[in-house]
Length: 91
Ligand SMILES: [Zn+2]
View 1: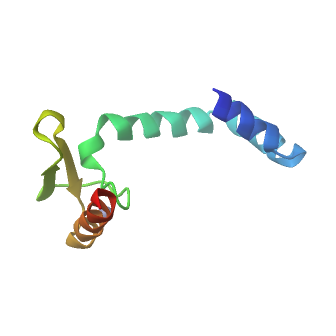
View 2: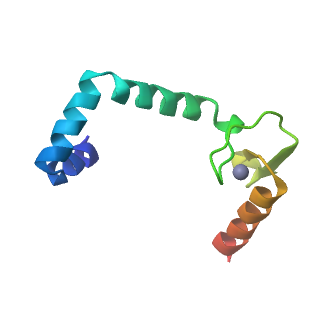
View 3: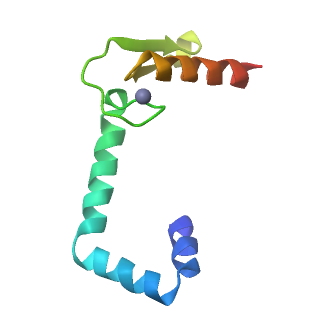
């Protein structure tokens, strides 16, 4: 919660009023719920562009055997970008 507290402390009067209205209207709860759904369905969202994935055609398994990770991509462009990033991280 420290991160949230820090963020709130940086907001202006107008921004705080807007945030308060959005909390009261239930928009913040909706946002949190949809974000939680994304975490639950981790493999159904492209990790590069956050687009929902309809089929798992472009699924990549990577990482050491005891810590295998799985990621699905919306398009070959995103898969390519992800592999490029993996290559840079491994170096
Ligand atoms: Zn994508």
